[in-house]
Structures are given as structure tokens and as C-alpha cells.
Length: 336
Ligand code: KG4
Ligand code: ZN
Image (cartoon, rainbow, N blue to C red; front, side, top):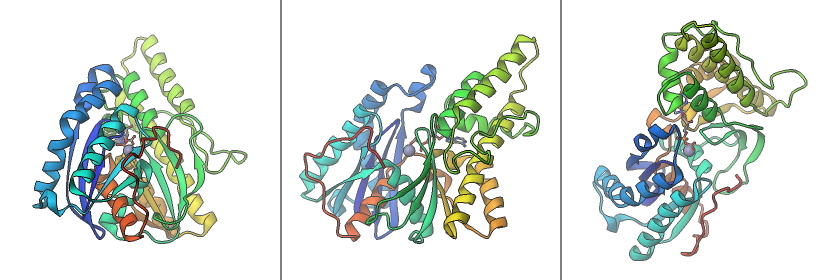
């Protein structure tokens, strides 16, 4: 059984996986402590991990009805992420691996976001297209064998990540932190056609699988400014619905086009923004129309957690991968 530990941002997660099955997990978040700053404060996140690490591991074991002695390997996120935050999780993982005399595995955070889907839907088909959309990343990937083959990048964002766009526009709209879920909630009462926000990089001459969200963020901010300058009340619900529609449209359009171009029958959408209701609905609609199977992890496993790290650790163990040395370093800007 593999214990996975995640601490790259503001969630401390521990998860337990054995042979592709999730046995239990627990997550603690310092989200509320960052709210009044409008974004994650690295030092606060790192300190919160120090307090949460041991209790979260115990909570995951309790969730699974298992004990420390049942842990056969420890996997931990080594990057990318906030350096102080990563350091806490990696130190905890090293301590546990050393004390238990079990192997340690370093895990790439984004591989975790991809692998978590296997806990719900079984092994990933080879190949599949993965759309990874989080607060720090927006990428389209061609994935073959997660544990063995390198992942092919089809395209990335040139500027902001999709989640960052949600978070920053939410702030301008006066919505609470974290912005993504707040935009999703506000959008329920809005009309997505009320504002014609741009669909960046979707022209015939644009790179097919590159993304850009900073222009969309600016367009939404200017729309809000113009409303406020004219003394009218900001129709936040309409703005949120239109923003969400623009993001979901661009993401799903490109992801489905990638499946068609590469002749791939399965699209996997993962990361925090995969929790967005419109992204999920539009992906479903467009995949169904194109005859593509869609896989999206359950909501609770889309945002950061320890199960995703344990899922990669479990794949590595079963692929016979070499464990990491006990002095393995963090890699805050790890490339995929
Ligand atoms: O994967 P994640 O938990 O952390 C990173 O690795 O970045 O993703 C967090 C991001 C944040 O930007 C958050 O606002 C966004 O995911 N998010 C959402 C929703 N839930 C989380 N964005 C839109 N709609 C949601 N329902
Ligand atoms: Zn993440």
C-alpha cells in the first residue's frame, strides 16, 4: 500500500492506494487563512502544512481503517509548487519512509492530477488526450503510459492558467476567494450570452493547442470598470456566466480538436478547473457529439489531494520504477 503526500500549494493531502484502488484519504486546507490576502501566501501555506502533515496522515489511515505498519511505500509531490510548502511535505515523507524502512517515490504534481482519474475509472487507455486545467497550469497532453513513457505536450497556456483567470476576474467582480468556485456559483443565475467575451487563440492562424487567458481576464476587468464608471450596478451573475462560457468554450473546443487530429478516442479532463460545472457540461456535450469517451475525476479529487500522489506512487511501484534517494530535493518549477 502506498501513502501519498501532497503539499505543493494550500492543501495538505494524504491518500492511501493499493493496486489502483483508493483505500482512504484526507485533506486539510489553509484556504481560509489566505482569503483576506486574496491569494495564497507562501509562508502561511508552509506553516499550515507543518501543523497539518501528521494529523492528515493519521486521518487518511483512520479513513482506510489501517495503521502505519500497513504502509509499504511513501510517495510525495516534489514539484512543481511553492518551495516552502513542498519542503514540508517532502520532509514529512522522508521521515516516514526512513522510520518505516520503506521506499520513497518523488511525484510530479501534474502527473498526480492525471493519475487520480484511474482511481475512479480504471487504467487510462493508451493513448489518451489529457486537458489539465488548474490554478497554475493549462496544458493539452498526449499521454501513453504514465509510469513509463514521456508525456507529449500538444500545447500550453502562453500566459495565465485558466484557474488564475477565474481567480483574478472573481476578485475584480467582488466575488469571494477562491474565485473559481465563486464564479461557478454566481454564473448559475446569469446569462452566458449577456456579454461577448473574446475566445483567445481560436482563429485559423492561431496555434491549434496553445491557450491564452490574460486577454480574456483584461476584457472582463474592462467590462466591469466600464459598468462601474457609468454608475450602473455590475451584473455579476451575467459577467460570471459569460466568462465561464468563454473559458469552457476555448478549453473544450481545443481538447476535442486534439482528439480528432491524433485519432484518440478518450479525453481526460483533470485539475481544479475540471470541477467547473460548465467545463464539465460542455466537455460532455462536445465529446458525445464527436464520439469521444470523456473521463473526469469525481469533484472531490479534482482539486489538490493526497490520493493523486498515491495513485502515481502505486503506478511507479507496479512498474518496478527506481525509488528516490532519501535526500531527494524539491523542484518548485519542475517541467512536465
Ligand atoms: O488543481 P488545483 O486545486 O490547484 C493547482 O494545482 O493549481 O486548482 C485550483 C484552481 C483554482 O484556480 C480554483 O479557482 C480553480 O482551480 N477551481 C475552479 C473551480 N473549483 C476550483 N475554477 C472554476 N470553477 C470551479 N468550480
Ligand atoms: Zn494541483
